[in-house]
Length: 105
Image (cartoon, rainbow, N blue to C red):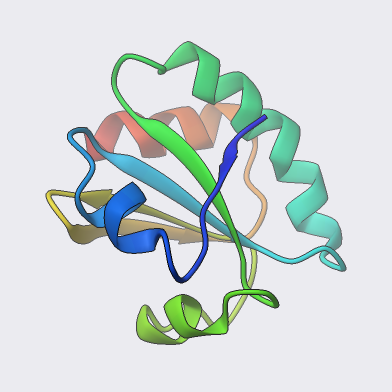
């Protein structure tokens, strides 16, 4: 299970992380978010040494979503050295998400 982050923990868990972090901005009611979740779990295991994958529920944590301009979900954003470096919006196939992660490392 991917680690859940919150508005309160985002700075420590994502911005100050010692390796890249992929943040899955999602919500409980979002169908495409539910489809992409198991794919992210698999990729999280596959790339465990290179990237951490975390989830941020935008309904429970609106401030972080607002700060990074998340308007549609799922939005997947890779943060590196405290900065967002790349985002993709919408459910993607596993192969596309793997390429997305690799291109962000």
